[in-house]
Each structure stands twice: as C-alpha cells, then as structure tokens.
Length: 301
Image (cartoon, rainbow, N blue to C red; front, side):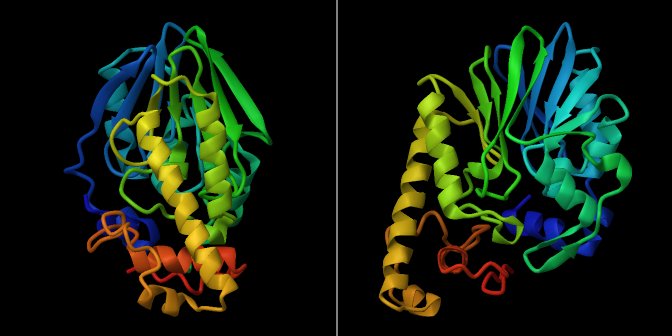
C-alpha cells in the first residue's frame, strides 16, 4: 500500500469502506517476548508470554480479525491489555474489537481527541464510538507488568501529536516509537493535534539517551530498526529546523524557502511519490516554527 493510498485512508470518509481483503498481516519475532505485526497502518508491537498478550496499537478496524488470527498463530493466550501510542485511527482502529478482550490504556489526550473528534489535515474526524475509547488513561507514565517484564508507556508531549507515547519493553530490550519515528522519509507532524518538530526532536533524543546500543526499535511505520537508524532521523530534524528558523528570521515566506531549495541535500527524504514531499515538509515546519497552528498551510494531496 503506497503512502498516498494510506493518506487517503486516513482522511477520506470512504476509509471504512475501503477493501482490506488483500491485506496480509506479517509477523516478525523481534526479541525476548516481543513480536512486530505489519499490515496496513501503524506497526503493532506485541508482548507474548504465559500471562497473555499486550498489544501496542491495532491498525484499522476492518483488520481486527486478521490481527486476531495472527496473534492466534503465535499463542492461544488472551489479549490482556492494549496500549495506544497516539490517536490516529490507523493506530487505534481496532480498539473496540480488542477492548472486548482487555482494556485499552492510553494518554489522556488520546481519549480526549477520540471522544471529542478532531481535525486531521483539515478534515473532520468524527468522535469515536464509546467502545473504542481507552478506558484507562494516564498523564506521564504507565506500566503493565506481564510476561516477566515491565512494559512502560512514557508520554512525550508535542511531537507527532500532543498525546504521543513511546513504549519500552524493558527486559526484551525493544522500544516502540509510535509515529515519533518513521522510516518512510520526512515525518508527518500533526500540528493540528498539538504536535511540533521540537517536541519530536526532544522525544527522540531523550529516548536515545536511555537505549542500549543493541536495542530493537519498532518505528510507527516501516521495517524493524536500530539506534543507528534513529540517529540520522534526529539529525535531519535538527538540521531542517535550523534551516527553516533561519529563513523565518530573515523574513522569508515558505514559498521563498521552497524556491531557495532550503532543504537541499534531503531530496531522498521527500522526493516524488513520498508521503511527505519536501514542499509539504517545509510548509509543516514553517507553520509550526512560525506559530501558525491552524493547518492552513499544510496541503497534502
């Protein structure tokens, strides 16, 4: 599934009518108790052991039964908890299905945005059904102690959104970054949901400082990664931010910065066909760093 196709699924009213019949769930053993599931939407992290299953994110609602079948292929143990990394429905779409088996745990901002409805890339997302709302919320950190390890969710504010959680599988030496780290190129920073590039940088740097060199990193989207993959992502964010900030100080508009090729050297991150093109990323950073939070400058095709 292309990133343009995924974007249509994220914002279009026809998303729930989309044909997911050809989507297959790929299961990868990561380390310790942890597996990674990939289908359509955000990557799923799973802890499996004698105590049951802890699921991190659950993709789109129509894929819930396929995800369940993939879990059954690993273990017959029940789902005990689900943790959401943020509110976007390619990460929380299966909440209502899996919450019949175990409670959903999430940062309080996730529940609030899901309950009230929100705006995503200028499109209205309706309030979620009651059964899909997280029933356990936290402010800073929360831990689930199952399968012989602490599975710790830590809130990092104002990154991809204002409700981001990074989830540490502490004994297995695995971390699920949610969409604060993705591998498809320039990231989507949802400034309409309180996200910001400085918060994304801060989250990544704080996480890196706590990680062992051999840790396995599950990105929000993309293949299983390492700290070596995460570091250049952070370096790009810091450099791009500095370039855009310089342009703002010089009184240049976003359109001028595009003409000046302010992000020259990062063509492979935002080239043609990428989910977030270079021009779209410039618009996002400019709106964020100039304090223009309405999303009017962010036009995704």
